[in-house]
Picture 1 (spheres, rainbow, N blue to C red):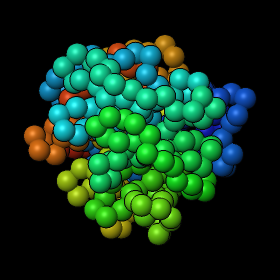
Picture 2 (cartoon, helix red, strand yellow):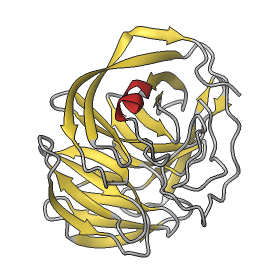
Picture 3 (cartoon, rainbow, N blue to C red):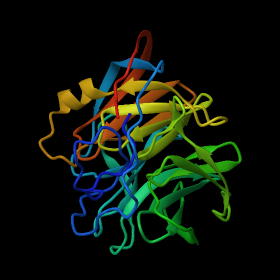
Picture 4 (cartoon, rainbow, N blue to C red):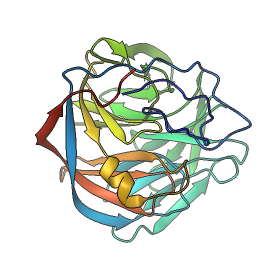
Length: 283
């Protein structure tokens, strides 16, 4: 999977193979250099099977997604329209939402001790929201860009578009350490939305139709998950409408994925029996 940030900004996504989330900001391109695109060796490429399709707000620039207490929670991006929301699965109806400061670009979302924590792209501000009412509960500061985030045990795991995942304290957001993410020993960047699923971290790779499955202990990618059939089904003309958004219903073992500006949210299973060994992304 190609890694590294494309020369375009979050919103103006090129057709680079692997990348992370951000909205169209042609006037505000990413500051980090474009990373090398690693060659995939014996890492299996797994197909997916669609279990169900649900409506999704086609105007939502999805940056973070999670499942909690029978509902989807979503964070959306772009200055002026960023928000956090609770969404009903069956019909995609937004049941409640709270706007993020109009000067900020909303990013990844995670749940910790009854609080939703949402990142911002360039502002270094993480917002805390009561998960029941979505009322604001304060903020934390952090350094660097905010992309995706998930909860792993007693920590938060954050992506910033680089080839490292940042392990943060869930209370203060202080950085504890970093996990270098690699495929066959080579760094994988453009990691975006994250979700912890049954012992592994799934990550969208920005501007590609792939997820990567990461061993959080070693940082090694042990599988590539091919979402390109879903991308083809959506058939979006907008180059910003890339896959982004992973939610895991741990109780019922349901996996959901969607994308920015997608009209559909998919429930999928990963078909390990159809794994293909090979190189989906080359340098």
